[in-house]
Length: 82
Image (cartoon, rainbow, N blue to C red; front, side):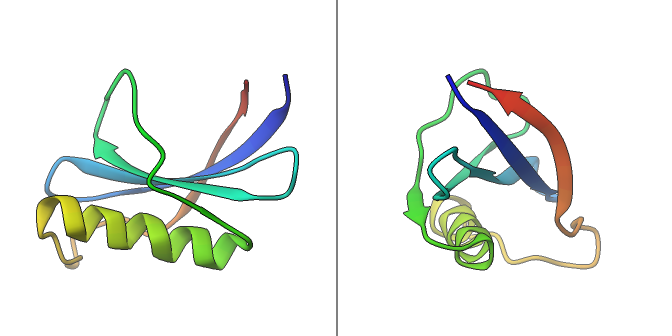
């Protein structure tokens, strides 16, 4: 079990974009409805920036959403124990 650090961006369509850094230094990207109990990883990237880009692309692909002024920027979330 490893510790990861996570960033979340909340959107005005009820969805969140997430990036989690793994113990191996990869960045897993997710896009899911807010409060989802389980999610499927959308991408694995090599940098935090690429992970965030991939999460936003997954959000757009899944929902057609494009960020507006009511969407939140990236915020570091509590670290997650896997």
